[in-house]
Image 1 (cartoon, rainbow over the protein chains, first blue to last red):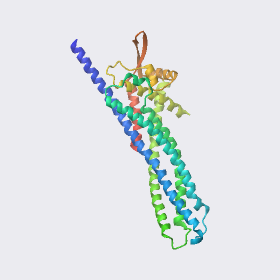
Image 2: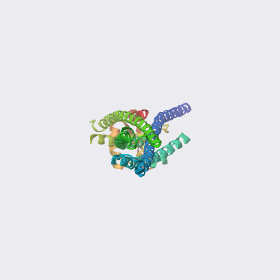
Image 3: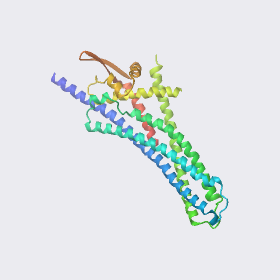
Length: 239
Length: 102
């Protein structure tokens, strides 16, 4: 009788360890994934800030040469050349703001989830019964949050692409194609030109990174859709 | 439209599975699971929706249920099966694979 009880306790302990370690492994991989996504979001939010800085410098520079138009006597400037940086500045600011709001909202949820996870790790043994009588922060919800955010990010990324191409075109026309300032070019024009060239290179690298990311994302999303279809058919279409 | 239908159903299915698995992770006794009312609150589901999905999950062999007397009342307790745990594991793996691409 005593041996049976001891064996039962040992089995229970083994079950507890098996259940905990299996789920903890999954939860840890989930947390790692969510943290990676957080870095991705931070990077995505940094880009509009970087673009805004470039556009502020460009706008300030254009305003300056616009004011001194008669002094240096540069040739006729197209409306596109004057207004493109301002137009881009407004649009990119809006895009940046939308991204920032998303990042902020999602980060709040993540902090809450990590708090719950840490509490569990601290107690390590059990989540009290009362913890289950209120809504829990679940990995599933965070995963689907990421999926819905990526959908919006894709739309935003298309906009970023359009504005990047407008910027590339402006950059080419204004600095490389036919500069509106007579030769010899003032040094400030060359510095701003070089600055825009560097930012073009950074933007191209960013676009390549994002295109690659969305390509992989779409592939994985296809896998998830197939999985969802399978689960649905197992539940709703069997018998 | 079809894809949306699968997604909506899957959010509920995986939420229920995760809720049960999380409750089970600290339960030593194989018989233990989670009380239906607790699961509904924890997963923040409507009772009618949860009941519909719980019966579907039981029929598909993802979870099973048993009754236990609790004072004068009888309560329904749910626990996952091997199949249910496997499906949840697939779901987490597909999602975390996406992280490797980031």
